Image (cartoon, rainbow, N blue to C red; front, side, top):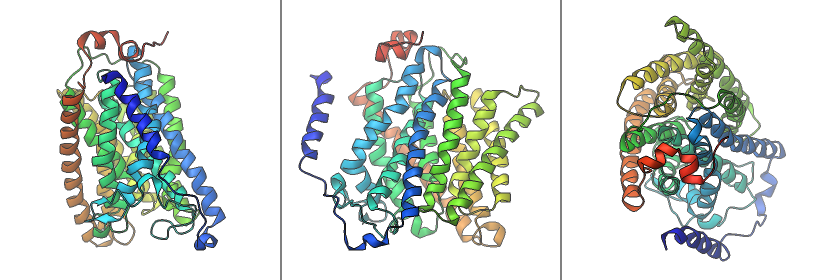
Length: 427
């Protein structure tokens, strides 16, 4: 019966979908739609979508050859799971009528009710509301996919899907609501997060840390990347898609989008070069893997600040993030925490650095402009988000483990997840 349960649940969801949703009627404010903004946001949404396959290549190339397919599929399957969940309840939890500034009312946009092709001025007044919902969906997709690098090579596939659903409902949606909803707790407390440094990268990084601690070390730790060209390809796709991630968060074809575009590129470039030269400073090889990780760290760190800082400040952010994350990775290697692909030291620490430096460098309200309020709010929010995400994720992992064992059996881990979970392998 247990093997049939997943299909039965999906069939029931399809049945429910027949009786819910809304017609894509055009309301009176359709004249407010800006064709340029709409065209750019369609492109930006597609770019962010591309980041998840890019992440699959990035992670898949770094794991052991016996788990390449499994690792890539863990990212790729999020496109299916979260897309369905987002329509039914995820979007409403993130952007529905606020309940205490913490979570959205699940009834507001249940099954995309009232998510029409007319603009919603509370969120984006010049593009169809449906397009806004789809753009936000891409963020919700990649966040749990980012976590997978921490428990690669040792998690059961069905258990991961269950955890992904719970994480999206209980961790991601509240953070998105608090940060980006007009009535959100953090937004009304002047916490700045232009494109998801807190919502996406800090949450994924801290959940990854919780998962690495909960699942424990791999039986055999083999640091032998299966395919470095995959990692380079994945980095290129992520960097390319990140322009939609950050520039698209301006929600229009405007000057904020251009500023975010420029800052995104320069911060990543700076971080990549800093990483390479820092490796030589310690007499280590200037590796392609290091260049790729450095580029990603820069992209992570600039995300919360992308629309709030100058080009010069983006260089500072990329430089500092590379140094701090590089040191964090070296410390993690010496610890007993088996974060397989260093998700917390790169995404978690990178997001934390970005959040702190946003409070320091943000135009007119940052610490360097003589203002202390934004910086102090960022520091308090950082602690709150870290505790909420880490503790919440650890509890969810425990819940999943009680329902479906999280970790594969030792013999399955020895065979590799490609064969034991999917019956496939890389020749």
